[in-house]
Amino acid sequence: MRRFWICLLLLGTLAGLGAWNAGHTETLCGDVAQLLRQGDGAAQAGRWGQAETLLLQAQERWERETPLLMLTLRHDLINDISSEMEETLVLLHWQEGAEFAASNTSVIAALEALAHSEQLTWANLL
Image (tube, rainbow, N blue to C red; front, side):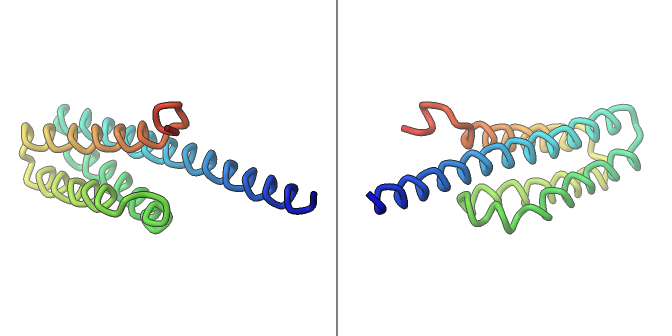
């Protein structure tokens, strides 16, 4: 009977950690995507300095969480998003409006896909 309770405790712990990870990843991706959307709006309005500040904040937030994400997610997804963010910042620096908007949209879509893949849904659990 003791083994049963130990197994149940371990299963509960793993389920709790999985739920926390899913929630944390969704919150992180949402926060970063929101900063990127604000940066896109600022760039479209011609406020390039403000857009750069917002994108740097987004990148800093993302990079701060990267070590934790590397423990729980596929490395290629994390690296791809990080590389796309760097590319987006370069395009912003050179004030390439259309290319920046396309790259920024691509990063936001990748973040949303990552958050969706971590949601606790039947499709993801199976």
